[in-house]
Length: 114
Length: 111
Image (cartoon, rainbow over all chains, first blue to last red; front, side):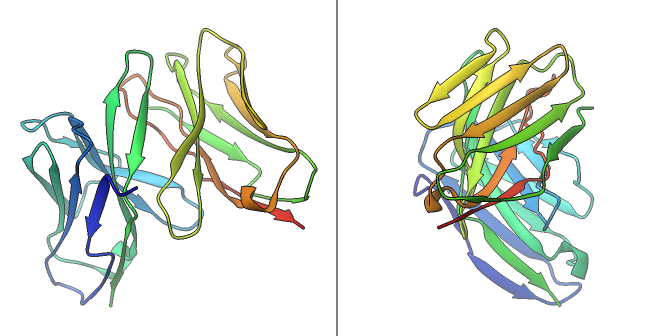
């Protein structure tokens, strides 16, 4: 979805390196999310933010940190990358409608940690 | 927290046949039940959803049914086409307003 962009799309890094994945959106949504996808495990929530001043841990936040620089930008950092953080990472945005909400996903960042 | 199970993990059907994917959840407070489709190389995309005040919703060849008593909901695709081949995820909204994704079903439609 062109409204949600992620950079880089692919990244190879070495164990112990700090890296940052960036997400930008033009949908004007307050809520943003970072997910990790591993084969056979679906998507697992790392961190989420319901507005610029709000940061919440998800299911698997250990080893990760985030920054919500503006309504449109939400970055994910791996402080010291390890091989089991090799995965596909997705950013998403949403806007609640009162009875549920649709999440809009970016194209993903494929990360390989050697 | 919400526990979500999705079955089957893989499903192969002949073009034109129907496909059914089932999702069970544990949080009785959940009241929003979406299904997402993920095509190769892309992020998931919402294809259909249902609120807890209805039992069924249809959109052309796709339908979702909900059984709140038994805590499960299902995705039904009729007259399957090759372009339906993808990975499908259920993702009920938990009581903290987060989507909890199932492990996914890889659907293959054979021409």
